[in-house]
Image 1 (cartoon, protein in one colour):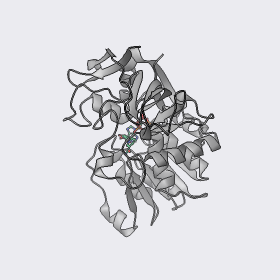
Image 2 (cartoon, rainbow, N blue to C red):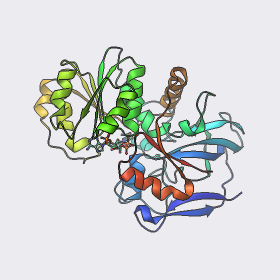
Image 3 (spheres, rainbow, N blue to C red):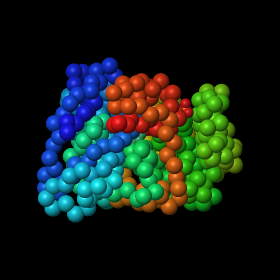
Image 4 (cartoon, rainbow, N blue to C red):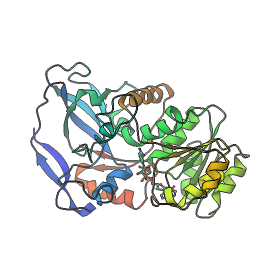
Length: 339
Ligand SMILES: NC(=O)c1ccc[n+]([C@@H]2O[C@H](COP(=O)([O-])OP(=O)(O)OC[C@H]3O[C@@H](n4cnc5c(N)ncnc54)[C@H](OP(=O)(O)O)[C@@H]3O)[C@@H](O)[C@H]2O)c1
C-alpha cells in the first residue's frame, strides 16, 4: 500500500504544505514499520512550517514529532515490538535514557532528526517506540511525546512537585494543560493564567484552583503571589519574553521556574535581582528520554488522565490544523487522523 504524507517541499509557510504519495520503506535491522493512526501538533511544528524554528531546515520535510499507531512489519532482530503492537514514538528517537546530550537532542522527529509523523507509514528504530497499555487509546497516545512529556519533566522528573505545593501554569495550550493535569495528579494546588473568561472556565473545569486573566491583569505575577500566600513553588514558563519577569515576581524564595517555551519571544528584559535574591532555580526543560516517556505513560494509565483534545482534522486538511494553532483557537491538543 502506498503511504500518504504531508510534505513541506518548496519553501516555508502553511500554504506550502502538500499531500503526497510515498513509497513505503521496509524495516531494516531492529526497525519497525508503524501504520500511524493519529499525529498531533505542537507549537514547534507550526514554527518549523513557518521557517521560524530553524531557518536552515532542509526541505522537503514531513513535519510533526508526535504519532501513534500499530506495528505492521518488523525487521530482523526486533525484540521490543512485534506486529500488531500499539505503539507511540518518542520525540527524540536517539534519547533513550540518561541526561540530554547534543547528539541525543539532534534526533527530534519532524526537524533536525528528519521526517516526522504527519504521514500514514513510519519506519523507525524499535528503540524509539513504546508499547501502549490497554488504558491508552491511539488518539490519546498521539498527544503525548512532546507536550505531555515536557510537562511531565517540568512537574515530576525535574520539578519534583510534592502534595500541597502550588504550581502556576500559563495559557491553555498543550504543554500547559498537561502540566495542570500532572500537578493535580501530584496533589498540588494550581493557579493558571489565560487570555479570556471562556478559557478560564475550561481551566476551572479541568481542576485549576484559581485562574487569572493576564490580559485584564497585566501585573498577574503579584496577584499569583498573593493567591499562593507567598508560597508559589513552581512556574511552568511557556510565555517567554512577556511572562518571565512576572513569573519571577510570583515565585517563592527557593522556587523553580521551568523554562519551556518562548511564545512571546526569546529575549526578555527581566529583573535578575529577583532570581538572585530569591535563589530561584531556573530549570530549562527539553522534553525527555524514552524512559521518561515510559514512566509518564505508566502514570497516565494508573491515574486515568485524559488528554484534552481540542480539534480533530483529517490528513487532507492538515493546513487547517496548522492555521487553527496559529490563531490560538485551541484549548489543549490538535490531532490529525490518518483515516
Ligand atoms: N522545551 C520543550 O521541550 C518544549 C516542548 C513543547 C513545547 N515547548 C514550547 O512551549 C510553548 C507552548 O507550546 P504548546 O505546544 O503548548 O503551544 P500551544 O498549544 O500552541 O499553546 C499556545 C497557548 O499558549 C497561550 N499563550 C500564547 N501566547 C502567550 C503569552 N504571550 N503568554 C502566555 N500564554 C500565551 C495561549 O493560551 P491562552 O489564550 O489560554 O493564554 C495559546 O493558546 C511553545 O513556545 C513551545 O515551543 C517547548
